[in-house]
Length: 330
Image 1: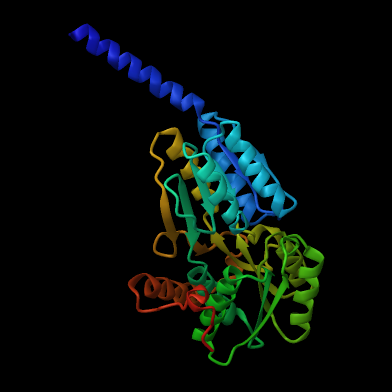
Image 2: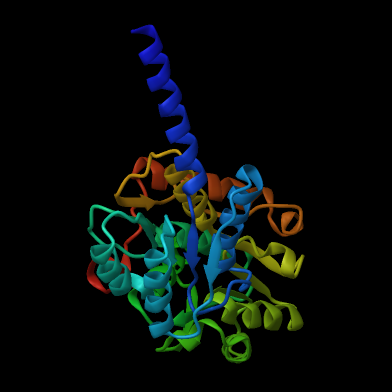
């Protein structure tokens, strides 16, 4: 009896080891490129952290168009990769289709929702984080005019803008907020020249702080603000270091954590499906603070930020979500 129990335990241990060894993670990025210093790069950093800690390698793919994304997701699933992380709302229908074809594969979709038993959807309350950086923008602005440059014109990016506007106007109800979207296709995420042009136009109208929520396009916004001695706000990853003293802050989305947790959970056999919505309370979104922007953040701004964070968490500040009704209160 004792011997057979020991044998069973040994077999279980071997099985667990085999499962851990069999994990073959894969990532399909959004069309902005892996090293966009923003959304995709945050996902890459999460994968790299997992690889460094566990020694488990992963495969990744950078699509240049929408059809390539679905092909890559299906290709990874067909070759036994697990989990497969799809880093973009653009892969929603692809994940829906491929997850049904490969029910034993675990999928993680970032920035959109697919209701399948083998899909974990991770979404963020970008309006909450954008509200906070809007507070900082309004307090830093001397002109009473701030700007916003979005990437692809979709409700998700309108959500960023609307939260930003609400935060800025909570400080100054008369704040002027200029806004432009870069385009209507996936190319809008990777056009820094156009991003710079839009930012310059807003600066010429008097904006002295410009928030970019545009993937690699935002790099042009940050560069233009620095060139014109104005302030910018980065997005998704901490971009403060790109132009120290010019980037006021960055609205960080913990996409790195979503990828790292997905790989870790699958490796441990603890994958769960369903939707995770991460906001200020869940520490999924937050303004980035470090030595690069420390000189730009006053004690009053820090205090205002703390109050706004507390208000969002306790519900006394309700940030309207553009995606709830496709509108932004004026």
